[in-house]
Amino acid sequence: VVIAIMLSNFIDAARKEDAHHKEAQVASSNSGIVHCLDPVMQVLANFTSVDDLRDMIAQLFEVLDVYEAGSLSFDCLRTALLHLHISHHAIKLRWEDFLRLTNGGKLCTASGGLSPQEFE
Image 1: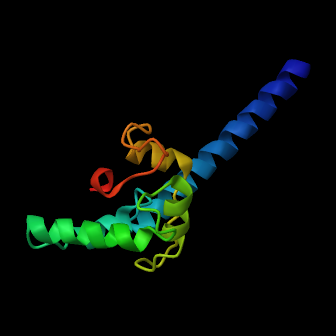
Image 2: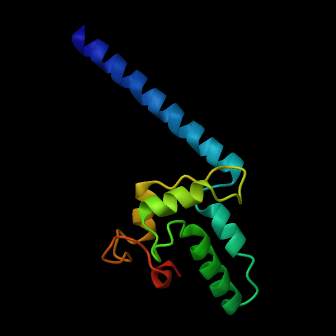
Image 3: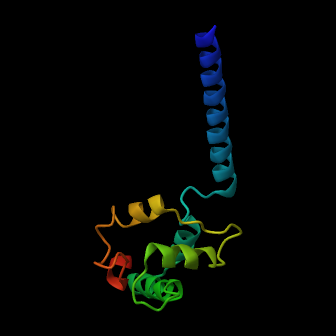
């Protein structure tokens, strides 16, 4: 009886997790956003030349550097993206996203942020 109850609870939990995962996928597909930075990438995709893209990236860095530190830490980037108004949805950067963007932190400076060169 105990094993049956445990198995039933496990199956219920697995179904709830699966339903939650499917809801998240539907929400992502409905908004067209696969990665949190997709709205930013959509804006950058409108470049007309390599120099134009570099200028757009440099301007974006300046906008995101809300602490004017010359470097984008996770906290700085997360805060700036939340207040960046280029999408109907707030851009919510997670630590996992930052690690993916910085190649596990390998692109970060010694202070743990992205300099303009690494950002580009």
